[in-house]
Image (cartoon, rainbow, N blue to C red; front, side, top):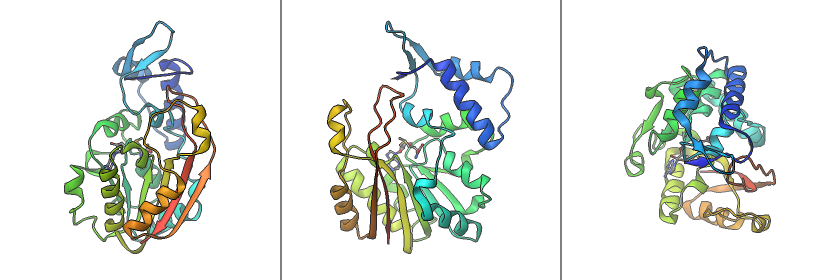
Length: 255
Ligand SMILES: C[S@@+](CC[C@H](N)C(=O)[O-])C[C@H]1O[C@@H](n2cnc3c(N)ncnc32)[C@H](O)[C@@H]1O
């Protein structure tokens, strides 16, 4: 259960559906906002703030705001590759919006792979990105099993990772995630994405996560074997959920 800091759940849902409708031409049935409200409303606290029955509220609030400009050339190269047989994995796909975006860009579904450890976020994605994805678009299994998946190992031209590194609290699991990202790539393949950053500005916020500094991230990527590592700091801060969104790093690295 998470709490919305700014605004009420009804308005949040209408805002998300409005954006998604515009971005992806999704047709929602009449009154669909109310269906979603009834499903996700978790009561209102004494301070007037609404609770939402979902763990990943931040990413939900960002649905329909997938801005790929910050990934620059990597995103353009990934789209172009996928149109011509190249393969991309969205590793920790969550709501599945990246796959819907690539579909809109004209990438072939057979070249786009989406993996997550469980259905939690994906099921919410089905509700909001209505009709735009199917269960067959996803691989969902234990992280240990996915590391042996022959559809993925050594087959990817790109591995994309948005807001996943900071969601893995255990350092051994984080290392496994980075090792898998490396193993999934073909030689010279590109790993790119974004993660919340450990940065001096964080001291003013009360946010409990296991965040990496740029040196720590670079060190972990290097140990796994990545080269050509680039890490770019972005200071955009959003205060829309009970969590303050930290400064972030857009990163990229090659196998
Ligand atoms: C904050 S959400 C981000 C989802 C999506 N990438 C986005 O940007 O909207 C983090 C996601 O990482 C997934 N995740 C957590 N641990 C993971 C792991 N070891 N391997 C892959 N995905 C993982 C979670 O299930 C969740 O869907």
